[in-house]
Image: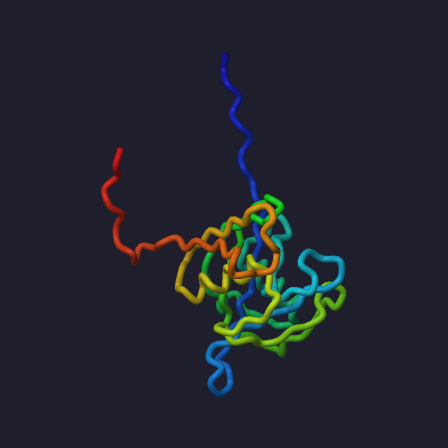
Length: 187
């Protein structure tokens, strides 16, 4: 009797805009963050402007360009979007997703809150002095970016806080090719 195949595993895809600039004075590199508000997940916490794909017709670059405009008012040329890293994330409630983090250093316009029902603040922060509270998933992506990683796993455990806390840092950087070839396989 043939065995029916297990259902394919599917996870939501989301995109994250890392608009970065050189800060004034000794601030170093700064990143644009927005504060979530209203009845959304992680209200009151800082996060990168982000969102989901609008459906199977939309690619990740088109999605981050769209989200940049919808959430911040910035006009980003797709040619200025740079792949920064990918994070495989699992929330404390157990739902997993894959996030594509994109760096953008050129845009038109001045960032501003475009969706006041779900965002009540927006500001620039030095990458080495991120605000609190910040969503742990977002912080994991920014920490992986600062470390130069191209892919990371951030699987939170049930009971972990949604906000970043160093005692619950679940970030695992996946070595890239620059780490050299893997050793021989055993077994």
